Image (tube, rainbow, N blue to C red; front, side, top):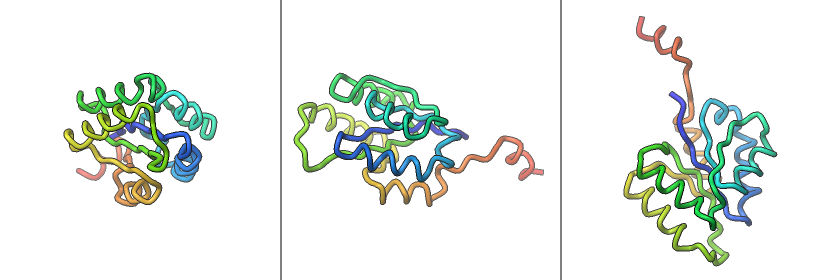
Length: 137
């Protein structure tokens, strides 16, 4: 079943996230991606065949919009590459997003290594419905 995956990266980590998405485009293609405005736009430019829905930029409320989706059970996976070495003016929003992901037990990846582990786990594998039917016969 397709997942809804939130993708977010701070400015200094956007290229790292874009590189990860490019490497795993085949795995991500079957899923719905939701990105904050600048991250989602960059990812769409890197992988134009991926469907990426956009919310506002993180500092303009995008982190909060994704947090609300987590609270509503609408996000299955959060892939968030924060920059731990740069102070963020919207740090409170980032902390609120992380708190909601923890409260609602949402699977998360915070760097390429943890995101690669999610791919390796098989979580992103999507079998077409007919494959599931054939397995039951």
